[in-house]
Amino acid sequence: MHAFDVLGDPVRRRVLELLADGERSAGELTEAVMHEFGITQSAVSQHLRVLRESGFASSRAEGPRRVYSFEAEGMRQVDEWMTPFRRYWTPRLLALETEIARGRRAERASDDEPQNTKEKEERE
Amino acid sequence: MHAFDVLGDPVRRRVLELLADGERSAGELTEAVMHEFGITQSAVSQHLRVLRESGFASSRAEGPRRVYSFEAEGMRQVDEWMTPFRRYWTPRLLALETEIARGRRAERASDDEPQNTKEKEERE
DNA sequence: CGATTGTATTAGCGAGAGCTTATATGAGTC
DNA sequence: GACTCATATAAGCTCTCGCTAATACAATCG
Image (cartoon, rainbow over all chains, first blue to last red; front, side, top):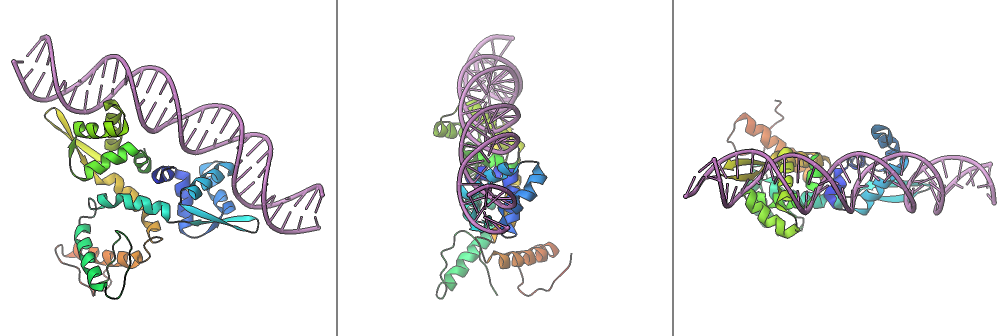
């Protein structure tokens, strides 16, 4: 399932919002989301599976519970796809990127970070 | 239709990629996408409608043609929703955001000033 | 062990998204 | 007006997604 399809579902988006604040057990997520959307435990569990399988979340067993964590990979893909569009609503991004490139060049003597399109800027 | 559902479709994503490079007539978009995905003119036109109605594209009449442009609003919403997650794959983003916010505040006050690095908290 | 709690899985159903075919609309041309 | 080109819309089909109900599995506790 494509990353954008994963985010297409409101229940899954809500779960991710909860996970953004930190880990949650399946039970906690179910509790929250079940009432909010009026769906069953089974439905929530199925959504959790989708999130796991598409790189948006991971789970580890902790006693009888399953603790879920946010996993960046899925959303990073989405973010990456949006890169070429971003300049349309952040006009200064282009200039910023240029400046970043400059900064990075200057800085490369000491630090090397193969991070992608994302802006870093700490100029003083 | 929710913004994420709009981006869930590969045909619509492709159209948006084309529009990111600049305006295209419906015909040009159709031509490109039709062959690539093996769908009809009608199908493409229906996708264009979705893009229009959800704030991802706009069209103007130019003679008998319809010229489509990328429209930022739809994707801006998506981008905004992702904000709280972004720190998970760009650890240094937090600092950057602070700085940008500062710059933006300064700019709104005196429109054409490059960011000054030593401003104090100014309320607005 | 059996019972209990927490979570996942399966089977089956219904709604809706995306498709095609056919048709409508609308601008330009003779 | 009749015709053509460019695009949109309508009707109907199909297949996928998200749901429920029922069940399975796994850890813990008596």
